[in-house]
Length: 348
Image (tube, rainbow, N blue to C red):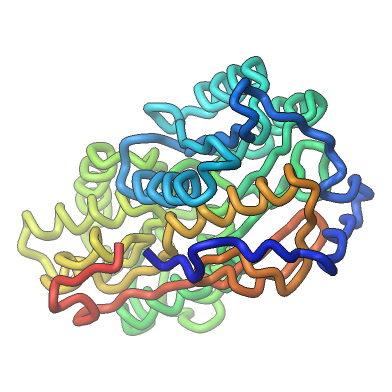
């Protein structure tokens, strides 16, 4: 666990109002929310993109840690759809609105599509937080958005890793969870821009990326399809852990270590593939800290407190966040390379 303190420092006096966005949204923290159950505790529910995958299992650990830490004040838990289906996610949020929970945190599969539902939640007096949804910043749909880092910087990191692994030459293919996943598309855009500027001999054979739906089985089948479709392929960039693992599995089965494979990943997922040569490099952040930070801000707002630049959300990578209107940005970029986990010890 990478939490810094065992308890939130109670003295938040002097923290200024979270800046009002240029779009003219109301100041964060002005919603007067009451507790939604008989226990007198705030109910905060985090809605993932999809349950049952390693990434969001780790996020739920952070939510559970938060719930344990603040058990006298909150009932916090995570839920989500069984598939990465935007419609299923909307239904979950609608059910939570009906339950009159106090705060809803969402990692949207389709930020724009879920926007009207989130706005209805706010109109019902519910605090709404999101992540990977900067398209909603400055709208009436949310109270805040937390990003673990600057998305352009993160995407550029992918471009640097892939171009180095490919020696700046050859064909490469890409995949995202879904084309509606804002963060995946932003990372890919930045990666492609870096490659185009710095490695003109690299060719993106997938101007429109494949969709892997954050699904292990689909990602594995997709890897076989890509390798068959592009016999001269020199590299692959996946913005989901399942995408990178699926390609690593296909390469392992074929005994190939000649193809550069770069992906969003976790240390525990990436370790064996990095050491065996089926994953060239990867990036990520700690989903547990992500879950903690989102719940931390929701609780502060429910208690009538506010967040400003420099605030410490009590997890590494969020010790001194930057605040711009509804947008809160941390600094939790983590890069993974061969040899890093050779001892088999994974932080998460």
